Length: 102
Image (tube, rainbow, N blue to C red; front, side, top):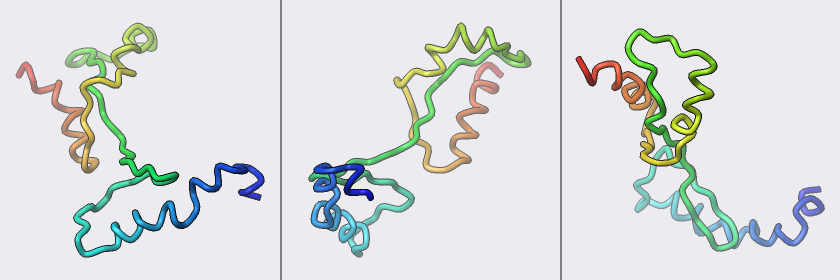
């Protein structure tokens, strides 16, 4: 069924296209941990989640739906982002604006 769905694209995901990355990841020389790689067709890349600066309403301000709509460009920006290594780092980034002016 998968071959019917992807057709000739299945060649990109043939074992010989993916195996080298798997062998490296399983090797003693690999220092990566907690990473997600995208592999296929001779291309290997890192897949990650990033947290941008977003928009901060201000200390003690509860944003409205209209605020979100009017600041959507900042919320959705793909510039100036951080790739967090764990959830605590994301929480620290979330809290940072609260203490910048303190």
